[in-house]
View 1 (cartoon, rainbow, N blue to C red):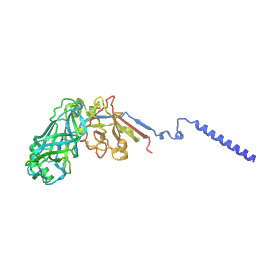
View 2 (cartoon, one colour; view 1 turned 90 degrees about the horizontal axis):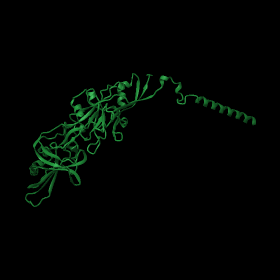
View 3 (cartoon, helix red, strand yellow; view 1 turned 45 degrees about the vertical axis):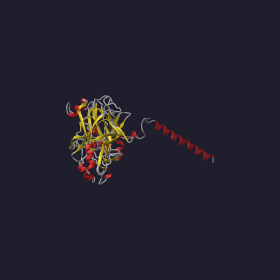
View 4 (cartoon, rainbow, N blue to C red; view 1 turned 135 degrees about the vertical axis):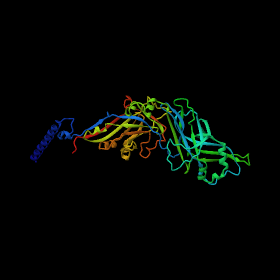
Length: 461
């Protein structure tokens, strides 16, 4: 027994010595290396590279018009922007018999007491809301058509005589802030008495084509004056109200009827006019009118993204192919960082920044296209585009798009637009009053950055 224990003790001591020897042998390797890498061929080592020195060329492009969609939210007003010049937003809309009623009658002898147009304000505005504006209303001589596609530059034939006018500020109606303006008594009395036009909505809208509502005649006092507001035409309070009484009983009043802007027959669009010659900064005016140097140099200091799709930014990343350098490259991230120049466009209560922007690809015909990073949900989560209020910037990750370019897809550059980056709504530009000024490539403080994280594989195996 003692002999057996002696043998086992010697074996354990030997095993312990062997383990200590191996431990010291491993320790002799470089402390900073990973076990096993020293036996790999040098050319097989793979490393991550981060580059943020790529050239970026950008300049402002004027957009003549954007599509205006037929929904309940429409903008109305005028503003003298100290950077972008004057903008006027007007509304074309029809109106209809509320609840789609038929054979409407206001009695044997209806007599008008008053008539008004009411539209509810929703709280979103651009500019100085304390400014009083001239609100003018004209009747349309041309009907809106449901099959037509209207843009912010579209216009319809209308009367030259106003049927409504109001100078002032918004008022309260049913605890809601509204635009309230008087409608011409002659028009309202004719609607009350002409029962043949009240048979149904089709006949009604053939007789009364609708209204053009504008503030374009407003005289603005200077930079920052005037406001453009968002209104809800579908709100319960919005519509044309006729107040009347039975002419046979003049002492009895208090009857009313509302003609609505909403319903299945509702058609409306915004007309928006950007007058850059009226007060726009010279740098912006130079870029959109074609004066000055070649395109790639126009936006060296600043680039301008306007409201309602008035401008967009042309973006070039000219040396993307240099990342491959005849080698296989895998792109992990490709971030375009756009910085807001608050020295030119300070954030304040009158002029906010867009909550997000969209970076789109340009095709061979110069038409906007989605980048590949917008197409799939998993890529779009990383795409970005939201405003970072802490760092005063927008960041876009277009790794998938850049990978395809390096794999051989032709690169025609990009567009930066004031729109939602979501692929289903990025086409829409008529629903934003915010605008922003960003830094160009020679802007020392607010210079854009293209930051690429990638891996190079030296050999195709």
